Image 1 (cartoon, helix red, strand yellow):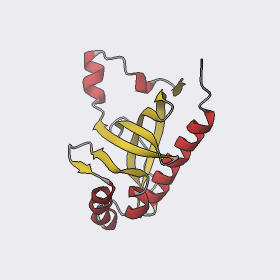
Image 2: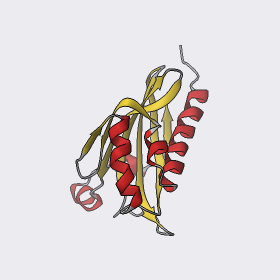
Image 3: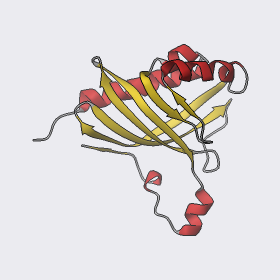
Image 4: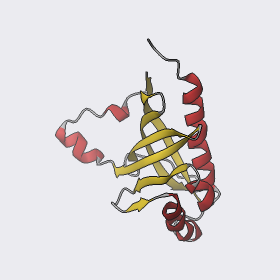
Length: 153
């Protein structure tokens, strides 16, 4: 039996839009609110935040200084439901300032686990990894994130 997850997919897309809007407005509380209370958040350079409160606390000074005026440019390359209440998202994205665009050099590969928590979709885990495009090319790697987006059911 195949379950129709269209409503869940729409809710997950809205969740990621809320995350992006909070980032663009520099609102650490709103950014952290899209995560579960016990979420794991790993940055591309390896630092880890544990829990919504720590995710918020880490982003307050970042949004005030280093990431001030930036926005997220991301896309889902695959969304797959593991259960009715858990989905894994693969994507790529970048943090950009002004009119800059996402390029192979600034793109990160992301894995996000979302869960239905008290009736709403929230992020339980996020991993952001720098994409080494040159190494992938040299190794002849077939990068599925370079293919058109897909939604797996």
